Image (cartoon, rainbow over all chains, first blue to last red; front, side):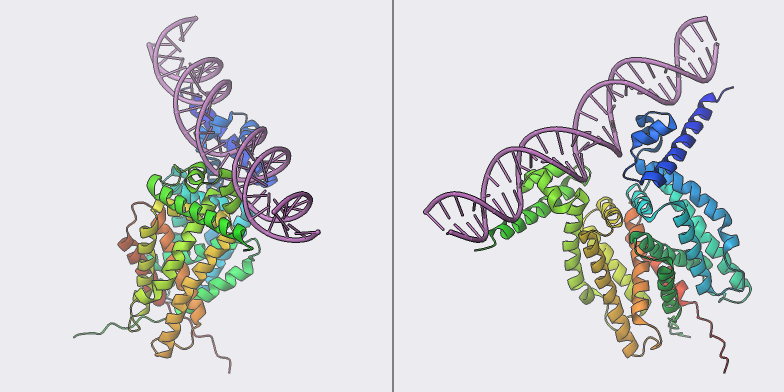
Length: 210
Length: 210
DNA sequence: ATAAAAACTTTTATGCAATAAAAAATTTGT
DNA sequence: ACAAATTTTTTATTGCATAAAAGTTTTTAT
């Protein structure tokens, strides 16, 4: 068999990420040393570095796994086609926050955000942003459906709107995890306020020179 | 004179931040050691830690200084009262990006973003977010003026709208600094797309049961 | 003006992340 | 089964961060 090596490598990766997740949840991010992760996974500390670059890299790998699962079931947990756009977006934000809190504590999510901005350009960071893009496209598809049903103007660009809504949702998500005291329902209210205010603005009709 | 001590302390703070700024711009963030900052400022490395907690803390202090200056002149560099909301917001984003690039390189701005999210709750981090709030209120005041002129619906909440626009602008700013290749005008186009799409949505009229 | 007290800084020491290079072990292909 | 290739481990170094002890300077009270 020609790929014993690749298989062992994958095994080690799995053990590292699994051990890391347990330790992070058990002792927190700062108090778990790479050495401890390595021992729990049965490899050397340097190997952890060779595989994931940094401690935050291990964390990112683990978050990406978890976010893939969210992506698979997100669309089906969102409200049906009768829902209005504000409620849809708030529900979207709700699901993401609930999922995030089921996975890790705010404390650790802050490390995730820091890691993806500092390590911008890394493979893992790119994978994270690609997942964001896929999450955004869940909104885009809903918007397209609403246009087909005549519940949204056919003039607007669904890609642009979906991305804008995702950006806004994401900004509020970051505020959510940035403050231990911030509660989910508060953040949802803020987001609702954002959306209502934005949707109340109407574009000026450009002067028609004909 | 009862506060020689306080004065010396302030002197040391100034020397530390000044030296740090020079070194960061000269050699980059990673390659300037706290020890080097300390030597340049004529104090010990531990003193730098005692004053600012972390290397990122020194960076944050320096960014806050610079952002205060931006805040002072931002309103006057924005387009006049005839400008439309999309253009106003894009101009706002434009000024912030130009100012940011005049102050530090993207590389270092990424460290700033990481620092404010990880060190959420710190004094310096709070000061940073307070400045964000003040920047947002530049938009809020413009919106209020537009309402008075009848150029925006009197129904909408200017605080909510201003904050929403700021959040969106900030999200795009972070994308700007997160990718070395991202150009200002590209980001401005994205933001414009966001705004046009969002402003194209109309709120459904709630069913009136009277 | 001087000595004790208070406030700060520096010195010293330790743990851990990150990185690099050499050494050791294991798989692969013949 | 053996030589070559690949990969991990060992070993060593740098720098951030933190804590405690030691040393210095300013302040306060007499």
